[in-house]
Amino acid sequence: MTEKVYSTKLFVIEPADVTLGSRKFYCQTIWYKPKILTDTENLLPADVICEVKLTDCTDYWGAKVTNSQLMENTTLNISKDFNNKRLGVIQGLLNGQRQVDNRPCRLSVNSQNELVFTVEGRENSSNYDEQLVAVVDIWKLQLHSVRDQSLQNMWRELLSNAIEQINSAEKLNTETAKMLKGKRKFSTKEIDRMNVTKSILDKNLIIKFSVVLNSKKQKIRKLKRLLERQE
Image 1 (cartoon, rainbow, N blue to C red):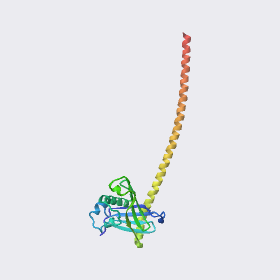
Image 2: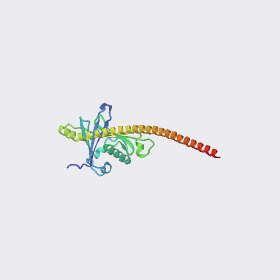
Image 3: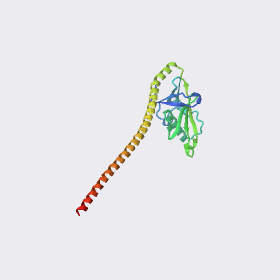
Image 4: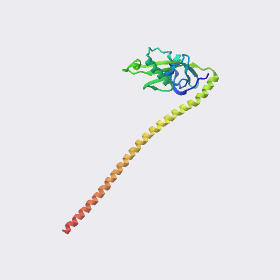
């Protein structure tokens, strides 16, 4: 029976090890359950929550995440509250988020073909926060290399369009940032030009006012002299 797909996410992640160089990895998450936190309480250990695919456009890896796996590789002695927060972070990272509950998080891949789920802790906090006072790897997911050529071809076809969309979006964001920066510079130049123009207009207005005032003074003096003569 084919699992119902609730949503699919595709995003870029970074390598965790320097040995992987500057390779760009694309991660795709296919969700079969909409919410980790509520679903894990009602599922069997072997039930699949989502499927993760990873590629650097040369090699392909994948893994299915089961309910029982979510509690594997957990070395922390955690409370229920902490585990709920942890599951929320895992779901957020598998959706491409880089911040969950105002806390910086990171999803990366290491040289052992593992997805590493990392969260930054905060000092001087309570409960969940007290248990994370530094950068902590809260979970790792082992990926398996995909060797089947037909499956690789299918993944390549499915991911190529999505990867192209990601690259286009990144390019658009870069161009938008450049445009906004250029607009700010343009606006500054325009403001400077307007200030110079205003200064010139102000000077011209003062000169014209002085001319008019002097002219009126001359007329007043002439009128006064005429009145004095008539007396």
